Amino acid sequence: MKKRIVALAIGVSMLLGTLSGCGSAEAEKNVSEVTASTGASTENLNKEGFPIVNEEITLRVFGQQGPAQQPWDTMSMWKKYQEMTNIKLDFTDVLSAEGYDEKKSLMWASDDYDDVFVRAFLTNTEIVKYGTMGILIPLEDMLDEYAPNISKHIQENPAILSRITAPDGHIYALPALIDLTAARDEKFWLNKAWLDEVGLDVPKSLDDLEAVLRAFKGTDFNGNGIDDEIPMSASDADTLIRRFAGVWGHQWQFDTWLEVKDDKVVSYLTDDSFKEELMWLHDMYAEGLIDEEVFTQEYAKYLSKASGNLLGLFFNQADDAFDSTDYIGISPFTGAADKQYVQSAPIARDNGVFAISSDCKYPEAALRFIDYFYGDEGSIMMRYGVEGENMYFDEDGMPRYNDGILDSPNGSGTEIGKFTIWPGGGAPQLVNEVNCEAIASKNTLEAQVALDPYVPENIYSAPLFTEEVNDRVTVLWSDIESYVQTTTALFIRGEESFDSWDTYVQTLKDIGIDEWVSIYQEAYDNIK
Image (cartoon, rainbow, N blue to C red; front, side, top):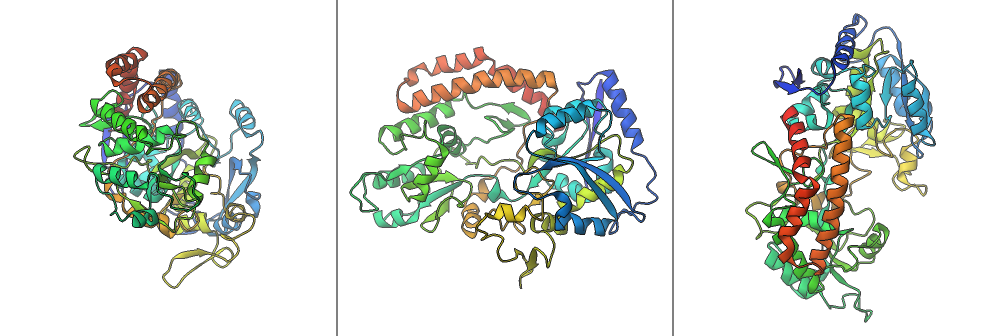
């Protein structure tokens, strides 16, 4: 059975691709019926501007109120937006986080569904299952006309489709969009104070890095007479290996150890280049240049080392947990491959932040309603609340929180959660350089500049699978991940000889790495 997906653009469609469907005939019938039902009267709807509808309508909302959030009906953001749109929101079924999953399961088992799902934490399995059953309506045919902001992002970043396209070719739910690269990858933080003290330049190549790390080793920078300085560290061994896999020219696609070359999905876990990376890490570890606790430490201990100024080079997304005064962001190191990459997260995150049920009488209005938050003005409202009440614009036109929010003794998340729903994640939102004040400091943004040239052009998200395929992927990956984590640690620590590399490769094949890759290949073929 063949399905088709409409890939989206502003004004004209980008492409119309034929997709290989996995659903049953009954599931296709359900989707067809729901698709037809979205053609309800739009006489009351304005396609542009505000209000969205001329005569007031009500949308019932199903979602989760986060622990750091006040009741949604008290939030200034929602109050203001209801006035702007002429759409009233019924928050009766916005539930507390405690016991939420159980309550959501009971909701699915009922025959009465709220109109829209907002911050409902819909899982990939739920999206595929209840989409193909006809409970969630397909959105793709409405996006171009009623969601121009979302369509624009998809046109500019077609890899977003990998996050939202179900195996049958339909789009049943929308993601959060993190357009801010500084929020999607871990910076290479280098201790510039240490570097200046040993009299070396910022390392550009792997050879330069080795020289810097050796100069850091054994130098008593804090003058306490204790050899507690660590030349290089990471939160865990996986992070360390991933950061240097990019140095060895490998990307991080589908949120795992995969990349796409000439439309072919491949894993580099069995490549000789991956072996070379592990051999280099082994040499650095044997010299004492890598934190010996990288295989066992808790994240809190890692951050305590960073905040205690005990690390020369380390990796972290932001500087919120340590004082970055003495640190600079640097680029991946040359010398191991022709091109280096930053293993960055995809733009589309938190899939399932918004969906429309088949019981909704106003799907077009509901889609217009949520699309606002993916545009410039709406994203500021979602992130900052209402001008005059929660925020203001400075002399440069940049949004700023009112005093007492970012510096609140209760924490900024708690203060922001009084007037908008994004703290805690899972919200339908766009995060970019304009609206990121709460999550990205000036130093974090500056550190990102060194990485931007190495971010892949397309970053594919973990795809949506049918329940059956997802179960198989879970089994395969559980075995692959366990073996890779164990064996790479042994290689780096020198407890396993690299003479056994062929055995490592064959074991991964026996576990099923080729089948695992082929599943992602099929998913990629469905959206390319």
